[in-house]
Length: 318
Image 1 (cartoon, rainbow, N blue to C red):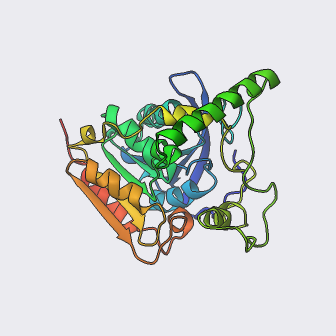
Image 2: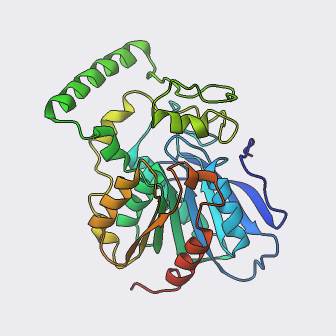
Protein backbone atom coordinates (compact mmCIF):
# COMPACT_ATOMS: atom_id res chain seq x y z
CA UNK A 1 0.00 0.00 0.00
CA UNK A 2 1.20 3.49 -0.75
CA UNK A 3 2.97 5.58 1.86
CA UNK A 4 3.86 9.24 2.33
CA UNK A 5 0.40 10.59 1.50
CA UNK A 6 0.52 14.38 1.41
CA UNK A 7 -2.88 14.72 3.14
CA UNK A 8 -4.42 12.99 6.13
CA UNK A 9 -7.25 10.55 5.55
CA UNK A 10 -10.60 11.61 6.99
CA UNK A 11 -11.93 9.51 9.84
CA UNK A 12 -15.10 9.17 7.73
CA UNK A 13 -13.32 7.61 4.74
CA UNK A 14 -11.92 4.15 4.06
CA UNK A 15 -8.98 3.64 1.71
CA UNK A 16 -8.22 0.22 0.24
CA UNK A 17 -5.14 -0.69 -1.77
CA UNK A 18 -6.15 -2.39 -5.04
CA UNK A 19 -4.47 -3.78 -8.16
CA UNK A 20 -5.87 -4.48 -11.62
CA UNK A 21 -4.59 -4.77 -15.18
CA UNK A 22 -4.89 -2.63 -18.27
CA UNK A 23 -5.44 -4.10 -21.73
CA UNK A 24 -1.69 -4.44 -22.22
CA UNK A 25 -1.46 -6.74 -19.22
CA UNK A 26 0.38 -4.17 -17.10
CA UNK A 27 -0.57 -4.19 -13.43
CA UNK A 28 -1.83 -0.90 -12.03
CA UNK A 29 -1.65 -0.01 -8.35
CA UNK A 30 -4.51 2.05 -7.04
CA UNK A 31 -6.40 3.18 -3.96
CA UNK A 32 -10.16 2.82 -3.64
CA UNK A 33 -11.84 5.41 -1.43
CA UNK A 34 -15.33 5.03 0.01
CA UNK A 35 -17.28 6.67 2.80
CA UNK A 36 -17.16 4.48 5.89
CA UNK A 37 -20.95 4.47 6.15
CA UNK A 38 -21.40 3.19 2.59
CA UNK A 39 -24.07 0.54 2.10
CA UNK A 40 -22.46 -1.89 -0.31
CA UNK A 41 -25.84 -3.38 -1.12
CA UNK A 42 -26.54 -0.14 -3.01
CA UNK A 43 -24.90 1.27 -6.15
CA UNK A 44 -23.01 4.57 -6.17
CA UNK A 45 -21.53 6.99 -8.72
CA UNK A 46 -17.78 6.62 -9.13
CA UNK A 47 -14.86 8.80 -10.14
CA UNK A 48 -11.31 8.11 -11.32
CA UNK A 49 -8.71 10.73 -10.35
CA UNK A 50 -5.47 10.88 -12.32
CA UNK A 51 -2.25 12.40 -10.97
CA UNK A 52 -0.27 15.22 -12.54
CA UNK A 53 2.27 14.21 -15.19
CA UNK A 54 5.02 12.44 -13.27
CA UNK A 55 3.00 12.47 -10.05
CA UNK A 56 1.63 9.60 -8.01
CA UNK A 57 -1.59 8.69 -6.24
CA UNK A 58 -0.28 9.73 -2.82
CA UNK A 59 -0.06 13.36 -3.97
CA UNK A 60 -2.91 15.42 -5.47
CA UNK A 61 -5.25 12.48 -6.13
CA UNK A 62 -5.44 11.59 -2.43
CA UNK A 63 -6.64 15.13 -1.69
CA UNK A 64 -9.45 14.90 -4.23
CA UNK A 65 -10.43 11.34 -3.32
CA UNK A 66 -10.54 12.01 0.40
CA UNK A 67 -12.96 14.90 -0.08
CA UNK A 68 -15.15 13.43 -2.83
CA UNK A 69 -15.60 10.10 -1.03
CA UNK A 70 -17.17 12.05 1.83
CA UNK A 71 -19.60 13.50 -0.71
CA UNK A 72 -20.98 10.13 -1.79
CA UNK A 73 -18.67 9.06 -4.61
CA UNK A 74 -16.62 5.90 -4.86
CA UNK A 75 -13.20 7.19 -5.93
CA UNK A 76 -10.31 5.36 -7.56
CA UNK A 77 -6.80 6.83 -7.70
CA UNK A 78 -3.88 5.11 -9.43
CA UNK A 79 -0.24 5.25 -10.41
CA UNK A 80 0.39 5.38 -14.13
CA UNK A 81 2.22 2.43 -15.69
CA UNK A 82 6.00 2.65 -15.22
CA UNK A 83 5.39 4.94 -12.21
CA UNK A 84 5.00 4.59 -8.46
CA UNK A 85 3.78 1.16 -7.39
CA UNK A 86 2.38 0.20 -10.80
CA UNK A 87 4.11 -2.29 -13.07
CA UNK A 88 6.02 -1.69 -16.28
CA UNK A 89 9.67 -1.66 -17.25
CA UNK A 90 11.76 0.33 -17.76
CA UNK A 91 10.71 2.78 -15.09
CA UNK A 92 9.74 6.38 -15.82
CA UNK A 93 8.76 5.72 -19.43
CA UNK A 94 5.96 7.95 -20.69
CA UNK A 95 3.41 6.63 -23.16
CA UNK A 96 0.41 8.73 -24.24
CA UNK A 97 -1.40 5.62 -25.46
CA UNK A 98 -0.87 3.63 -22.27
CA UNK A 99 -1.51 6.61 -19.99
CA UNK A 100 -4.79 7.18 -21.82
CA UNK A 101 -5.66 3.47 -21.67
CA UNK A 102 -5.14 3.44 -17.92
CA UNK A 103 -8.22 5.61 -17.41
CA UNK A 104 -10.28 3.04 -19.32
CA UNK A 105 -8.71 0.29 -17.24
CA UNK A 106 -9.96 2.15 -14.19
CA UNK A 107 -13.46 2.14 -15.68
CA UNK A 108 -13.12 -1.64 -16.13
CA UNK A 109 -12.15 -2.04 -12.48
CA UNK A 110 -14.87 0.19 -11.09
CA UNK A 111 -17.54 -1.38 -13.28
CA UNK A 112 -16.79 -4.79 -11.74
CA UNK A 113 -17.44 -3.54 -8.21
CA UNK A 114 -20.98 -4.57 -7.16
CA UNK A 115 -21.56 -1.25 -5.35
CA UNK A 116 -20.66 0.93 -8.38
CA UNK A 117 -23.21 2.05 -10.97
CA UNK A 118 -21.58 1.37 -14.35
CA UNK A 119 -23.67 4.12 -15.92
CA UNK A 120 -22.37 6.74 -13.49
CA UNK A 121 -18.59 6.75 -13.90
CA UNK A 122 -16.69 10.01 -14.41
CA UNK A 123 -13.05 11.05 -14.47
CA UNK A 124 -10.95 13.90 -13.10
CA UNK A 125 -7.54 14.62 -14.57
CA UNK A 126 -5.11 16.86 -12.72
CA UNK A 127 -2.45 18.64 -14.82
CA UNK A 128 -1.10 16.18 -17.44
CA UNK A 129 -3.76 13.64 -16.53
CA UNK A 130 -6.31 16.17 -17.74
CA UNK A 131 -5.11 15.57 -21.29
CA UNK A 132 -5.07 11.80 -20.83
CA UNK A 133 -8.54 11.82 -19.25
CA UNK A 134 -9.94 13.79 -22.18
CA UNK A 135 -8.15 11.50 -24.63
CA UNK A 136 -9.73 8.46 -22.97
CA UNK A 137 -13.19 10.03 -23.02
CA UNK A 138 -12.85 10.70 -26.76
CA UNK A 139 -13.15 6.96 -27.44
CA UNK A 140 -14.51 5.41 -24.22
CA UNK A 141 -18.19 6.33 -24.02
CA UNK A 142 -18.47 4.56 -20.67
CA UNK A 143 -16.91 7.74 -19.24
CA UNK A 144 -19.99 9.87 -18.72
CA UNK A 145 -18.43 13.15 -17.60
CA UNK A 146 -14.93 14.66 -17.48
CA UNK A 147 -13.42 17.34 -15.27
CA UNK A 148 -9.88 18.66 -15.52
CA UNK A 149 -7.91 20.73 -13.02
CA UNK A 150 -4.93 22.82 -14.18
CA UNK A 151 -5.02 20.80 -17.40
CA UNK A 152 -1.88 20.25 -19.46
CA UNK A 153 -1.99 18.84 -22.99
CA UNK A 154 1.38 17.08 -22.86
CA UNK A 155 1.49 16.38 -26.59
CA UNK A 156 1.22 20.11 -27.26
CA UNK A 157 3.51 20.97 -24.35
CA UNK A 158 6.36 18.82 -25.66
CA UNK A 159 6.28 20.61 -29.02
CA UNK A 160 5.99 23.85 -27.08
CA UNK A 161 5.43 26.19 -30.00
CA UNK A 162 8.64 25.10 -31.72
CA UNK A 163 9.06 26.05 -35.36
CA UNK A 164 9.97 23.48 -38.01
CA UNK A 165 13.69 23.95 -37.54
CA UNK A 166 13.47 23.49 -33.78
CA UNK A 167 11.34 20.37 -34.20
CA UNK A 168 13.88 18.86 -36.60
CA UNK A 169 16.67 19.69 -34.17
CA UNK A 170 14.76 18.09 -31.29
CA UNK A 171 14.18 14.92 -33.31
CA UNK A 172 17.87 14.76 -34.21
CA UNK A 173 18.86 15.17 -30.56
CA UNK A 174 16.42 12.51 -29.42
CA UNK A 175 17.53 10.16 -32.20
CA UNK A 176 21.09 10.43 -30.93
CA UNK A 177 19.83 9.68 -27.42
CA UNK A 178 18.10 6.54 -28.70
CA UNK A 179 21.44 5.33 -30.03
CA UNK A 180 22.99 6.06 -26.64
CA UNK A 181 20.17 4.24 -24.86
CA UNK A 182 20.55 1.23 -27.14
CA UNK A 183 24.29 1.14 -26.53
CA UNK A 184 23.84 1.51 -22.77
CA UNK A 185 21.06 -1.07 -22.55
CA UNK A 186 18.77 1.32 -20.63
CA UNK A 187 17.06 4.64 -21.34
CA UNK A 188 18.40 7.86 -19.90
CA UNK A 189 16.36 9.24 -17.00
CA UNK A 190 17.36 12.46 -15.25
CA UNK A 191 15.29 13.25 -12.14
CA UNK A 192 14.17 16.82 -11.74
CA UNK A 193 13.57 16.81 -7.98
CA UNK A 194 15.70 15.78 -5.01
CA UNK A 195 15.49 12.41 -3.30
CA UNK A 196 14.82 14.16 0.02
CA UNK A 197 12.61 17.26 0.36
CA UNK A 198 14.22 20.67 0.51
CA UNK A 199 13.49 23.18 3.25
CA UNK A 200 12.90 25.87 0.63
CA UNK A 201 13.20 26.43 -3.11
CA UNK A 202 16.49 28.02 -4.23
CA UNK A 203 15.96 31.68 -5.13
CA UNK A 204 17.77 31.47 -8.48
CA UNK A 205 15.33 29.07 -10.18
CA UNK A 206 13.17 30.85 -12.80
CA UNK A 207 9.45 30.32 -13.30
CA UNK A 208 7.72 28.04 -14.04
CA UNK A 209 10.48 25.70 -12.85
CA UNK A 210 10.31 27.30 -9.41
CA UNK A 211 6.58 26.56 -9.27
CA UNK A 212 7.14 22.84 -9.82
CA UNK A 213 9.78 22.96 -7.07
CA UNK A 214 7.31 24.68 -4.71
CA UNK A 215 5.25 21.52 -4.80
CA UNK A 216 7.38 18.51 -5.73
CA UNK A 217 10.70 19.46 -4.13
CA UNK A 218 9.51 20.53 -0.66
CA UNK A 219 7.51 18.88 2.09
CA UNK A 220 4.26 20.22 0.66
CA UNK A 221 4.16 17.67 -2.17
CA UNK A 222 7.41 15.71 -2.15
CA UNK A 223 7.16 11.95 -2.71
CA UNK A 224 10.07 9.57 -3.35
CA UNK A 225 8.17 8.00 -6.26
CA UNK A 226 7.72 11.35 -8.02
CA UNK A 227 11.21 12.60 -8.80
CA UNK A 228 10.09 14.52 -11.88
CA UNK A 229 10.17 13.95 -15.61
CA UNK A 230 10.41 10.83 -17.70
CA UNK A 231 13.03 9.06 -19.77
CA UNK A 232 14.55 11.51 -22.22
CA UNK A 233 13.30 9.76 -25.36
CA UNK A 234 9.72 9.70 -24.04
CA UNK A 235 9.36 13.09 -25.73
CA UNK A 236 9.40 11.38 -29.12
CA UNK A 237 6.11 9.58 -28.63
CA UNK A 238 4.47 12.69 -27.19
CA UNK A 239 5.52 14.62 -30.29
CA UNK A 240 3.77 12.02 -32.45
CA UNK A 241 0.49 11.62 -30.51
CA UNK A 242 -1.98 14.55 -30.56
CA UNK A 243 -3.94 13.80 -27.40
CA UNK A 244 -6.92 16.06 -28.05
CA UNK A 245 -7.38 15.55 -31.79
CA UNK A 246 -10.95 14.30 -31.29
CA UNK A 247 -12.09 16.31 -28.28
CA UNK A 248 -15.27 17.37 -30.10
CA UNK A 249 -16.42 13.74 -30.07
CA UNK A 250 -16.82 13.76 -26.28
CA UNK A 251 -20.07 15.71 -26.79
CA UNK A 252 -22.87 15.30 -25.74
CA UNK A 253 -21.06 14.17 -22.60
CA UNK A 254 -19.95 17.19 -20.56
CA UNK A 255 -16.51 18.63 -19.79
CA UNK A 256 -15.63 20.93 -16.91
CA UNK A 257 -12.30 22.76 -17.16
CA UNK A 258 -11.14 24.09 -13.78
CA UNK A 259 -8.21 26.50 -13.90
CA UNK A 260 -6.57 29.06 -11.65
CA UNK A 261 -6.71 32.70 -12.68
CA UNK A 262 -2.93 32.95 -12.22
CA UNK A 263 -2.04 29.56 -13.70
CA UNK A 264 0.84 29.65 -16.19
CA UNK A 265 -0.96 26.75 -17.92
CA UNK A 266 -4.32 28.51 -18.28
CA UNK A 267 -4.06 28.62 -22.07
CA UNK A 268 -4.18 24.81 -22.31
CA UNK A 269 -7.66 24.79 -20.74
CA UNK A 270 -8.76 27.77 -22.82
CA UNK A 271 -7.62 26.12 -26.06
CA UNK A 272 -9.26 22.81 -25.19
CA UNK A 273 -12.45 24.59 -24.14
CA UNK A 274 -12.57 26.38 -27.49
CA UNK A 275 -12.15 23.08 -29.38
CA UNK A 276 -14.69 21.13 -27.31
CA UNK A 277 -18.39 20.98 -28.09
CA UNK A 278 -21.27 21.63 -25.72
CA UNK A 279 -21.95 20.94 -22.93
CA UNK A 280 -18.75 22.48 -21.59
CA UNK A 281 -17.70 24.96 -18.93
CA UNK A 282 -14.52 26.85 -18.11
CA UNK A 283 -14.48 27.50 -14.37
CA UNK A 284 -11.83 29.98 -13.19
CA UNK A 285 -10.67 29.85 -9.57
CA UNK A 286 -9.66 33.20 -8.14
CA UNK A 287 -6.20 33.75 -6.67
CA UNK A 288 -4.85 30.36 -7.71
CA UNK A 289 -1.70 29.33 -9.53
CA UNK A 290 -1.30 26.03 -11.36
CA UNK A 291 -0.15 23.92 -8.41
CA UNK A 292 -2.80 25.30 -6.05
CA UNK A 293 -5.34 22.96 -7.68
CA UNK A 294 -3.17 19.99 -6.69
CA UNK A 295 -3.65 20.19 -2.95
CA UNK A 296 -5.10 23.45 -1.63
CA UNK A 297 -8.52 22.57 -0.30
CA UNK A 298 -9.26 26.28 0.08
CA UNK A 299 -8.82 26.68 -3.69
CA UNK A 300 -10.03 23.40 -5.22
CA UNK A 301 -13.76 23.99 -5.94
CA UNK A 302 -15.14 20.78 -4.47
CA UNK A 303 -18.70 22.12 -4.35
CA UNK A 304 -18.50 22.78 -8.10
CA UNK A 305 -17.04 19.35 -8.81
CA UNK A 306 -19.70 17.67 -6.69
CA UNK A 307 -22.59 19.46 -8.39
CA UNK A 308 -21.11 18.88 -11.87
CA UNK A 309 -20.86 15.12 -11.41
CA UNK A 310 -24.13 14.82 -9.51
CA UNK A 311 -25.94 16.61 -12.32
CA UNK A 312 -24.36 14.84 -15.28
CA UNK A 313 -23.70 11.31 -14.07
CA UNK A 314 -27.46 10.85 -13.74
CA UNK A 315 -28.05 11.86 -17.35
CA UNK A 316 -28.41 9.28 -20.13
CA UNK A 317 -26.49 10.16 -23.31
CA UNK A 318 -27.80 7.27 -25.38
